[in-house]
Structure formats: structure tokens, C-alpha cells
Image (tube, rainbow, N blue to C red; front, side):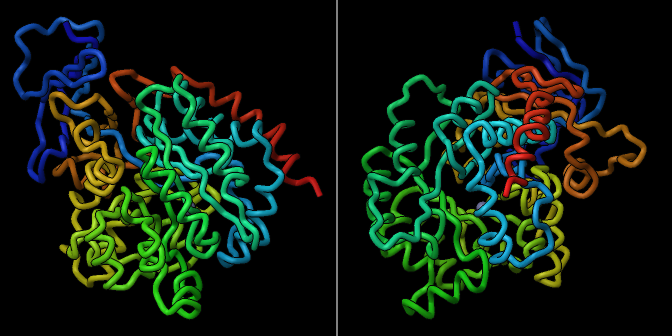
Length: 434
Ligand SMILES: [Zn+2]
């Protein structure tokens, strides 16, 4: 007997470009997909049967670069340059955030992600020991890291808060297998090489992947070249950062040689188009990276520079920007955009055999999308409909590892209204304190 049986669904499986099933059935037992076909199973007995009524069932989205707790800084200091935004506004505001404030923002962000179809996210922030447990309780799949960031001349790895939090979390054996811990270097410009060397050896010793920001802005990239004569990618690579599985956010200003290096080292470039446009950082050349063999995934970045965690916005924008950067509407298709936020994200995080596709044996990380609203009709092509027409607001069911976490406005594992109240009543006054 199935735990959940979804029928009459238009299923975008992401098993291939043409692989869409119509009036199809998807059966889930425990956390796994055990039935997938346009024909009904012999036995349709199920604890819960959902009639999708022609709506789209697809893999849940994978947000490969987020600072989820930054929802508390949504709309804070918009419309200024990245360096002004980061150093004069964001860093001072973040210095005021305590564990309670970060937890509230993180819970709010997870609720936003679940309600807009994200099932897995790759996060970089503080208080990771607390955040890992919040994510676990919410039932999401996540990768947690605290990026090493220090301008101290006498930097000491063992005394770094990011390292202390990481080591504490590594000793925690109470987390489920959905929650993963990563090592992280904030970026080439914001930490010393001694920190990278220590982080790499710790990551190797503990089998951790790495999460970094890479060549996000021209000053970031050019500053490194001017000072050291090599690019940030080359510099990080020379210190072994790419010798372990790595996701590199942004990659807006990477050179062709950098792209070849990323491909050779199997580093995933995470495209963050909304954030990059909003901060006028530039437009990453994702077609060129793809063509040179780089795995390209998608992320929202923090809500402070986006200002939502709705992956559908980034997915559509990624496609539109790539078409225009190449002067060719065929250069990047709706299917390509779907790959960024599903299979490529799974590959980036080492989860290619677990999530990112609808396939028997995979874990059931699924979303249902309403296609019957007036502005969605008719649906000539389901993939085009998802990328160019639908948005996060059209998601009405989000399932992670076989469990429905969100359905029709109701959250089953977290209370976003508590988080909203905390953000308004506790965090907002904290941020505005002089
Ligand atoms: Zn970021």
C-alpha cells in the first residue's frame, strides 16, 4: 500500500528533456518514490490519494546558495553599491543579530522556501549549531556552513567562531541524514590563506564539502589579480580549496581559464541572477561555463539582496539573461533552466542518486503546481509553463523525503507566524538600535 498516491498529474520527471508524463501516477512509500507511470498501479490502495487534476508534479527545487536567516534584512539598505551595502550596512546590522534573531529569520526563510517549492538549500551563516537543528525539525534537506571571514593579521583558526561552531556541529550525532555540514570560506578577499589551509585539511579529515563566494564583483576579482597576479579561482585552487567537492557562488567575473579550472576540479558554479542584477555585480556567463563543462546550479543568495527566496524568479531570470547575453533565444532553454534548479543542484551537493528527479528509488522531494489559474491557461508545454509562467505562489504542496511539509497554506513542521512575530517584535528593534 502506498503512503501517498498522486494521480492525474502532469509529471516533469527531469529524467530527460522529453520526459513528461501525462495523466500520470506517482506512488510514494516511506521516503521513496516506488511507482511512476501513465498507467494506474495494479493496486491503488493508499493512505492518502491526491488528485492533481492535470496540475504539474515536479522535483522540488534546490537552492544552492542562500543566507536564509537574512530574511530579517529583507529590504534593508536597498539601492546602494555592493561594498557600501555590505560594509556600511549589512555587516554592522549583522553584528547586532543574536542567536534568537538569526533563528527567527532562518525559520521565516525556511517557511518561505517551502511555500515556494524549495526542498533543499545550501546555506552559509552564523549559529550553525542552532540552525542545523531548526532545519532538521522543519524536515528540510539542507547543507549548513559558517563562512570563515576575518581581517585579523594574527588570525587563529582554532579561535575562529566559524570553526568552533563547525567543530561543535561535527560532534553532534543527533541530526538526521537530511542535514549536512559543510566547511566554508566566505571569499578570497575576506580571509587569510592560513584559514584556507586549515579549513581544507579539516574538510579532508572529516569528509566535508566546501562552500565559497567566487568573483562576485569586479573589485573582488580585479583586486586579487592586481595584488597577486592571479585570479581568485586560481589562488583558492592553489591552496587546495577545489580539491574537495565545492560549490562556488556567483562566478560573475571568472575568466575562461577559471571556467576550465572549475570544470577540471568539478567545482559547481552557483548562479544568483537576481542578487547579481540588484547589486549591479554583472551577469555570469552560464552558457559558456556550461559549454566548458562546468556544472551550473542556481541560488537566491540572501533575501537582503534579492529580496525573496522564490527560486522561480531566479529560474526565469537565468533563462532570460542567458538568452540575451548570447543574442540567441535558443542558447538557453526552459529545460536548461529547470536543470539548474533540480538535477544540477543535486549534482552540486553530491545528491544525484537521491533527489532532483522523479524516478523510482529516489527520495520523494516533490512539489505540485497549480496550472488552472486564468493566467496559466492554456498549457501547451509544461516545462515552458513552469519556467516562464509559474511562480512560487503557484506551489500548493511541498514534500521532502516522502513527508508533506506544506500544503495549501498550511505548514506541518514549523510555525511561520511565530517567526513573523519574532522578526517584527524582537529583531526589527534590535536592528534599529544605535
Ligand atoms: Zn552569498
